[in-house]
Image 1: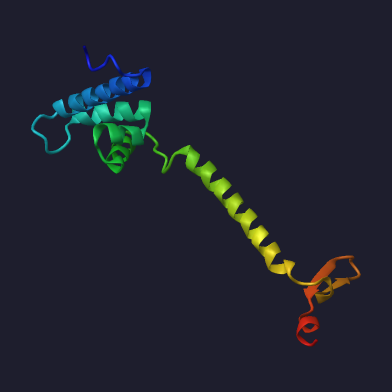
Image 2 (image 1 turned 180 degrees about the horizontal axis):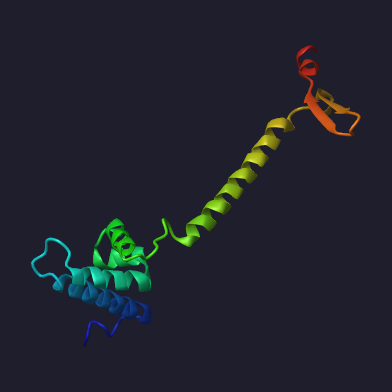
Length: 140
């Protein structure tokens, strides 16, 4: 009986992916068996991987710092973005969420005030000006 007999499909797929990742890392390290500085073959292999699966995934896969991979790509004339595209979308929606909560909190701040405490003025250009009447609360 094999240890793979009782595994689910997802577990088998995960094991195959991990094995493939180990094989790729082993191949990358075999390009320079002495260690030390990266060889030109290692750099080429890393650049090829980074253009297909991305800089961050290559960094995790081959255990090479992301900045090093970006430097190699820039040296080859390949443009490297500072961060992935999803970060800009995430930042936009985060800002919108913060603005919404800021509006909600500002409504709560003024909610306890009575209607008589505001002075409404309409000038000749029909612009409405709302001012807080401090003395209506503090002089009574």
